[in-house]
Picture 1: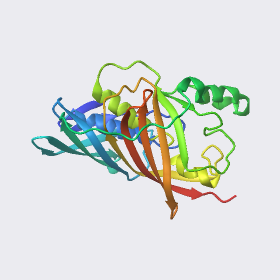
Picture 2 (picture 1 turned 135 degrees about the horizontal axis):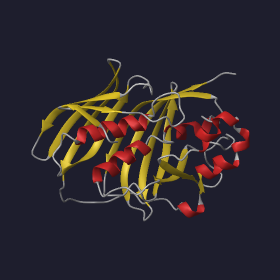
Picture 3 (picture 1 turned 180 degrees about the horizontal axis):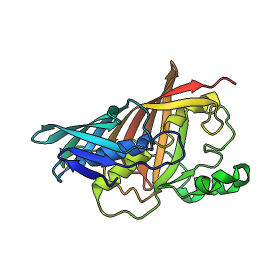
Length: 277
């Protein structure tokens, strides 16, 4: 999330390989947010973002983020960010920032879900199945990731696919202690919000990324920030998929603190093409 400033409104970010063939979409969302924030006065925080993934990102090349200062209003600020690689836009995002205001408040309560201490770390699952992984890939397979994921018992990407309702619940947090910087915590959550959201629409169809029977890609992503939170403390990501059609899966996510406070919401539609064998 630490970008290099090239010129006014122009920033450069580097990519990290987390195991996929393309740049991870959550990384581009988080970096684009980090770029836009640098052009907004400190007293205004992002409350919503809406993005489209236009082309696959290439991990061998840096990403240039071009920020457009669309509007600076009395209460709201609007920005647009275009991510560019090799002269072509790969990602387009609009963001809205707001100064702090008082008003009515309510939320939908968190479901009664086993806590993170009752769930299994994805890293521990990887360690138990390491013998099934070719030796040349084992170091990469077991490396520590920036976000720790804990799945509910019997769930997770490495479980044998079976027909399930279009719902999912995972606990997640940054693995390292983060500084007291609200913007950084928002960028980290934006990064993490792309983890597992699309897979919820696979549940009713016995499809799984780990089994290799589906080809997928994020098409768009939207997010709303409701209340303060820390990304280095446990957050429950409750997701559901109301619909899948025309080779697209539609997914929604709600992010709660361990105390049950709703802090953010996300929506994503993704391509899901069944691979015929």
